Amino acid sequence: MVFAKARLMCFLSAAAHTLQRKIKRNTVILQGEGGNVESAMVLIPLLILFLIAIELIVATNLRNGDVAIAQGEASRRAISGQIYASDDVVELSSPDRFAHIRLLITHRRTTLPQIVPGLIALMGGSPSTDVKGAAIMEPIN
View 1: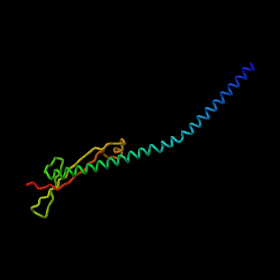
View 2: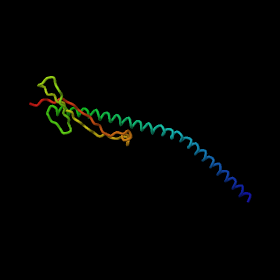
View 3: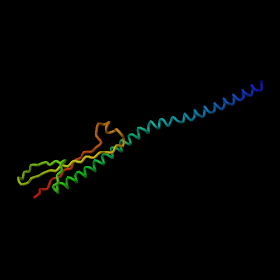
View 4: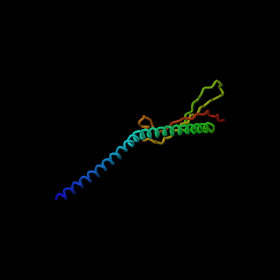
């Protein structure tokens, strides 16, 4: 019986030592995880800021492209005399009584892609660009 008791004490001591080592190893692993939380706290807002910047760049470039297209359409239609229902024609007064100056204004609306969902709605806007092109209409004989 004394031998069994000694053996049990030896087993419990070994088990306690093993458990102590596992706890120490897990503590070291968990202490090493502290950097991941701080890294996520920095990277997530940085990623959102990056996506917002990309969305602004894309919107600006699409608007500039739309301005060029609208201006080209206005010039083409002013030369050919085509007027669509969405176009505006402005009559300008001229000091020369024989000159009749008309200004054609075209409109172009394009929807923008949304990289950050809800960003444009959060700012109270609509995800589209609305640009205008203008050209002097040629007189048609």
